[in-house]
Image (cartoon, rainbow over all chains, first blue to last red; front, side, top):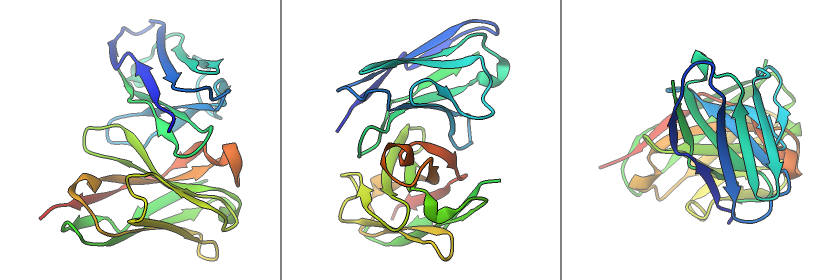
Length: 106
Length: 123
């Protein structure tokens, strides 16, 4: 199975900050990497797929990059509604695997 | 508008069985892969099972293989998860999620999720 490791597991930031979350795969997954946002008590929502493609309706302050084993999610200017937990997920093969999550606290 | 509505969760004793359903609307159900993902209380996301569109192959996490069975009824736009030999560590919110495509890597990107149904396994 492909292991996904996210860092940090939590971070505290202020409105307007630039935030970066990293995700590392245990083997190469090309660009088969997705990012999800989950707010408390809600279902996850797809933010970015194929490492860097923004899902429809997602604000442009979110961006993704990377290929192979190392990936990054960046929020260019943190907004109050971005308080959430973020997960990476590889869709290179099954079993699908998620990172442990990064909790972003404002 | 894509909608996924899970049902069938509840309290069950260890060793018991439960069947979850996910009623889908707003898209051509048969043309997309579908998945179940769970989240134990206070924990992260764990993929449970998936099935490709068109009634093709299905896949399972090792933790549920041999105990859970995923199926779909394209005539009813409904996804199912039959769970048996339930254990305490199966306690979680179970989410139904839609893939972006019918098969292959797009089908394994989860672009819409239901609100989940809670399964509690306890004596």
